[in-house]
Image 1 (tube, rainbow, N blue to C red):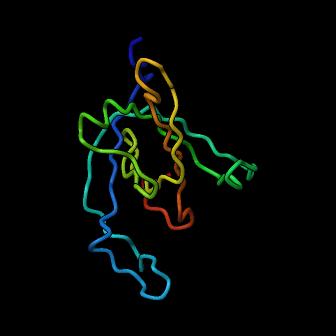
Image 2 (cartoon, rainbow, N blue to C red):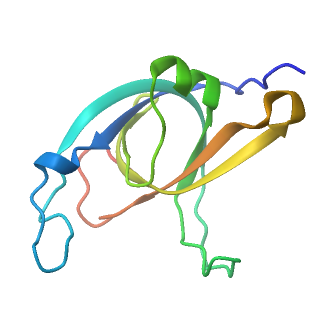
Length: 137
């Protein structure tokens, strides 16, 4: 069975956090101010804009609200030698400059001949909606 295709993919600029050069609070073990970003790559993804308006219960606890998701094919990510991780920043979705972060990953499109998932949904959310740049959503 062939690997499924994306419908109308757009370029997504992904920025990965550089944990080694990010200033971390010694007491709370979390980044101080803004996390340093090092790795940046662009990959095609299928975008769905939409907001989950309420918290829903899930097996692992309550599901976080999200502003939308981007669907990626694993084969495209593997070609670039990259993967999407929680905390990655989407700086550009198509032509739109954004400041949204991956909050949840969901593998999908499982096929037996591919030994599992062929795609991943990366749900994203704006962490600071009150402090947006011009051009951001």
